Image (cartoon, rainbow over all chains, first blue to last red; front, top):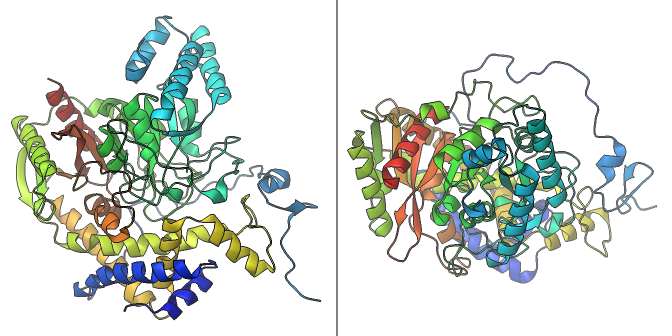
Length: 99
Length: 478
């Protein structure tokens, strides 16, 4: 096995995903199979190869800059419109700190 | 006028000759699309108000004697991962079932500025993750040519709408083949432009180093005109390319004599099916047009799937972290602490494929595995890009299959995620290299299922890609 049930539960915790026991077992089997395939990358000699972090083209040094001009922002009301819970201009969430 | 077979040119001609108004056309197109939609469920929802007001603006321009724009009055369908201000945008997810974007994607703004009439939003795999459109929280889409089969994915609704004739054009998104593969399955043209060619402002992020917006259409020319409209630098997307946008239709002069085409040996090995025969016949047509075809080698191809599914899932796990029940409409009920709320919201909200990819992506980025998986994959990605660079020093374009097989049956592959991933092999390599690639219809199997041929070109060499595709399309029409 490439990945244990304990690791699956740990990764789910890192990802903030609540999984049922059935899902844990299913994903353990799926990830195991996929990681088995992915392991073939180890056959490739990448000695001295620079990692490709993104597709880059020859551009001028300031190509990702824009003019420093003010633009109106979305505004609080619009930004909050899709919030499941909001109030007083804020996103509301369950209590974080116990008193 | 026949709604089913509208083209940009025909709409323009009719509008300028005052045979019909843009509003009349939009009303008729909406009526037709709404009536036909139950056969495929390509659209998730229609936007009649938005369509009619866009059409009215076109009519006003024509009445004032102004140029109504290159897409004047043309009905356009939009994949539901591209944000439309005030028009619900769900990404095929339960999490965003009620999400109404506060702004338009740049591609949307450009389409409407050019006179395009957005009819509605099309179904897709959840957050664009899938190759069959079966991962949508709102049900599958059926292939208009074979209702028991998938339309491909993830831009399945967009491809189906164009094939069905319920839109003349559609916008899709492509991360590993999500425009080309459904275009191939539905028998339409689908274009993944060069990485950075089209602004992604307002495209819901899946894997940021791989995401593209691109056009689907019934002809190469219409796809090129739509790309012309949406391409170009956008100050709102720092990753959009500065390179000037050439006139794509000008390159489509039918002149392909002497063009050097590469056939990757690694793609054709094992392709013994009818798909292989149709691609071989397509290559023969290009040979008859005077192209010089030679075999080339892209040796890193074997590792592309592994490379892609590490990079794409790693980036997805990070991009999807924002759906936490705080900002985007859906929050699980009966949440205890903040941390419980995150976990329950995501556990209830995401479908199986998204969860699988979030898990894989989180795993490969987690402590102790980063170098072995993510870093290794980025190095292999560099080798895949190098393969293409070497090939393009010898040839002008590459011709390949899009998918190993035509549209498969609904439910046929959904229980085998690895098999589904492996079927993306021919489209994923071009995505990793960031080069322009497209699918152009290349005939039907004996069962009547369409097969697309893929044309790949150098970075920003969409003109050569379109020139070839257009010449091929014309040769096949004769």
